[in-house]
Image 1 (tube, protein in one colour):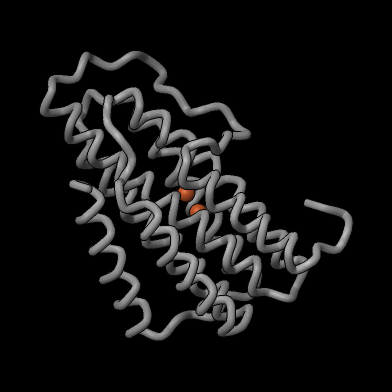
Image 2 (cartoon, rainbow, N blue to C red):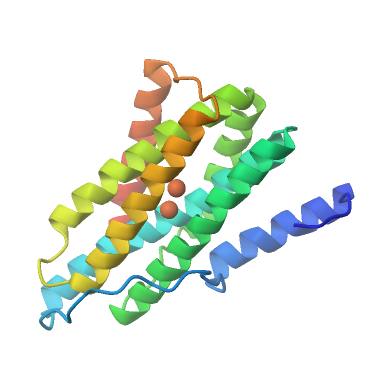
Length: 213
Ligand SMILES: [Fe+2]
Ligand SMILES: [Fe+2]
């Protein structure tokens, strides 16, 4: 992060750069990609396609995480909270790079709709951020808990022999739980039921679509 105050133009350029990196696959992980303790059996075509589709869904989730944290960091005026969002976003960058690499290994591609997912998530992140820091943190808690459950379901659905994908998803699930806990400890306000249900509905649309597109 810059030690000098950023001008509005600097901020716009930094946001655009961040978005392009999330979308063009050039994000670099700070941590090494989690690997399985032993190599799994070779996957057949059906397993490979299914694992690729699930990892594409997870990659979309990470594209959205980039957009959400970027928007929420922009919206807060509290420098400590902005740093917390940026720390979590750095883990999400690892997740983005790991899932992108795994998509390559599985011989498939990221979602064609990633620019749309990014734009939608950025808009939602701005709305959450403008609702105040406690609500913004509550949004993080709810999002991260939903992602944690979703990744748990992928650990059940991934082919049993796809140990490489499983190692990545398991580490991501643990990181997301840490992000939720950090947001809770920072003073998150629990979101009202209808907002949580709407978030679940939106996530279902995204995950169902991204499996195919
Ligand atoms: Fe993540
Ligand atoms: Fe997270």
